[in-house]
Length: 126
Image (cartoon, rainbow, N blue to C red; front, side):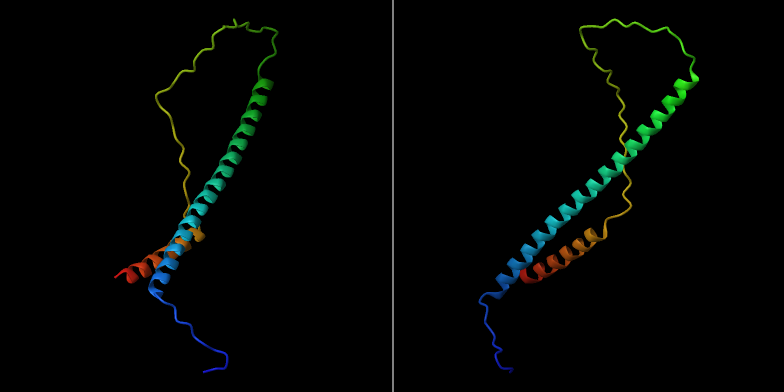
């Protein structure tokens, strides 16, 4: 035995190990939620970028349309109603789904760690 080396007995080591593994499991769950929100933030940024591009395309098309239409002095005069009209509710709403290319590597690593911890926990509970 090397000089200065000593061992300390830990009473009820299986309970301490179980508590450590359960806390590790909770940490991984929190990290998975963090990765989920991080992915959602990235998706939001991509959607905002696409929206900006579509808006710019619409602006360009409107400018082209205004150049092509003949100039007139006729204007339509609208009656201003005191009541606001309710917008028509269409029965069909289209939802756009964002195709997810795959889970991020960090999320996959966290899931593997969680599975290994759950395996160790089930081994301790027997």
